[in-house]
Image 1 (cartoon, rainbow, N blue to C red):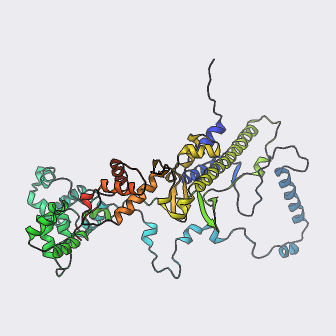
Image 2: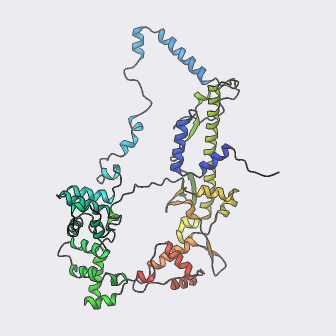
Image 3: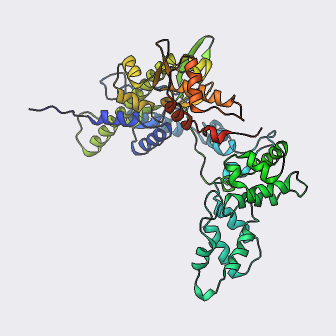
Length: 489
């Protein structure tokens, strides 16, 4: 004897649809529409009727029979008309059930309107461009010999996504065919030509050279140009360690002058290759929309993201109960799968609505006041409230997004651990991160707050957090340590 869990195909399908994102679900629905003739989209204005077309009802006549009768009546009436009467009955322009804008809505929406002055064709129609293709495009416009062009292509292949040359010139020179007799001076000369391409600073071998290339492309009358070139060429290490006193002593300038030189250097881009976006844009379609009506927060599903489906009554009318032929069996199976699919979609929407409603009910403070009012929340709390298992809640909250007046958030964003407060309460880790971010933004840049100091400020607010926990939260926010946040201004 033993125990085992048997999952029906319907349950497996419901679980699979539950964990799909909106974009994946739309693709799944499209595949189901293409493979199952019994499924069709529910258009606006149509009567949504998913009643059983195989039910025994004397008033419901099969669709095929109704269609045949109407066709016969049309044929008889057409035969009884004379030629003149027939021509008078038919109008010159027959009405259509669709409009041009309905069919070509996507193409028309991408065209500029009369008052759209900032419309850009390339940003809406072109794919992302890689840094290599951008440099090769400039290379094709530059007059070069065949040998120099070969060297240039090899150098461009060695430039990483940040815009820096990864291999040394010696390694690149050694990689050429000895019969070409390419010397190191030729490779360096071609590199200098590539370093004149856009974006400024591309092809540099280190950070100092990258910043120096960008300074050389600025106007000659730029204030503090000479000091900035000397700073990035000779004292880039001191600038990285923020040893300002040593910089002032070696460069023989005052604090105000050094501040202006550093401002000029900070206006440069240390990663010029990042200006060229090579990845395709990723769009997030919210599953749930939250809005405030008077003093109430309303939760509703995004109906535009999920198309409504129904069973095609015409095809379903062809199914006969007592027929065991292969065609009738196929149509019966397709009809059953269509019902299962529609029911699984309804179950997914109901579960998503329940979970989203409980999340909004629990996180009203966040919606009203922001991250600092976020409450601690775990999967078990929502699972207990809606009467489901934690694994189901995990599937529902993965890759599902909620549109709120504060922005679009993944449902998992509202779940966070907690720490104890001095008054015996609990504080969310998300709220602590928001407080840390606020403290760092308001700190004195000459004397930035250390992790221990931040922990002391949190303890003064009644939040008991260890220094290592503050460091972990700070790193998750992308905030540098206090030694790297020090500024000379």
